[in-house]
Amino acid sequence: MKILGISGSPRKEEKSGTFSLVQTVLENTGLDYELVSLKGKTISGCIACLGCVKDNICKVEDDLTPIREKIVEADAYVFGTPNYYSTLNAVSHAFLERFFQFRHQTGNTLWGKLAVSVGLGGTMGQAPADDIERFFLYNFIETIAKVTGQGAASCYSCGFGETCQVGIPLMLHGEGVKIAPDMIPDVRKQDEVMASAARAGKLLGERLKGSHDRMKVTQAMQEKMMALLGESV
Ligand SMILES: Cc1cc2nc3c(=O)[nH]c(=O)nc-3n(C[C@H](O)[C@H](O)[C@H](O)COP(=O)(O)O)c2cc1C
Image (cartoon, rainbow, N blue to C red):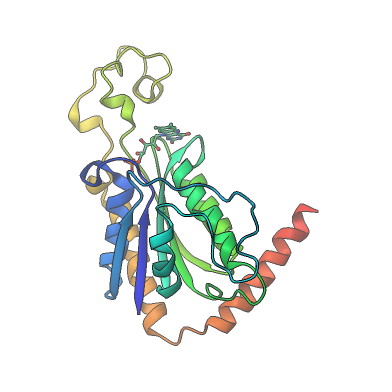
């Protein structure tokens, strides 16, 4: 059993709360894992060329190309993204758009696999975590847990945080805010968030080590997908 972790943050690993949370989930699974950071990677969105429809292999050549095999081989995914404009950031969105390559003919490469989604925002991470779940549903992957938290918005370190009228410090602490290190959100110091990441990891490990029935999960996800489509027509 092997789990693929993806952190969509463009920040350095030691500064990224998304990376930390994804790593914590992975460490708690008790299984082999690989954690790939999308920092510095150039990944295009799907260009709708339909080059993948016959063989389920994307023909766009970029930094996603060497990761494709890891996606295929993994039994589960832990995918994290920072919240940008209440959704996934661009590189995470592009990465997941390219899962279109797995969706043709008898493209059941990913069906019935499991996932944990991780969303981190300057205020909240729920919206992007929900968006990851929806992306995974299109490939009949079950998101078994979502981990969300509040991370350090760049506004605390940009140099204008105490006066910027549209920055998070003013928004959260009000006019006249004086930025002190202990007011900067850091998921590593948020016991409840770290505990929820650890719980998600343990749950993922247990589900994978138990009698994980991909066919059954696939059927459940197909039903969920049909219900979702039914709601939107
Ligand atoms: C372009 C941009 C847009 C953002 N939009 C939001 C937002 O809509 N809501 C929010 O809560 N945080 C927003 N943020 C803040 C980030 O989500 C926050 O800094 C997060 O902690 C980044 O995670 P990381 O440390 O793993 O990179 C935004 C940040 C950037 C750079």
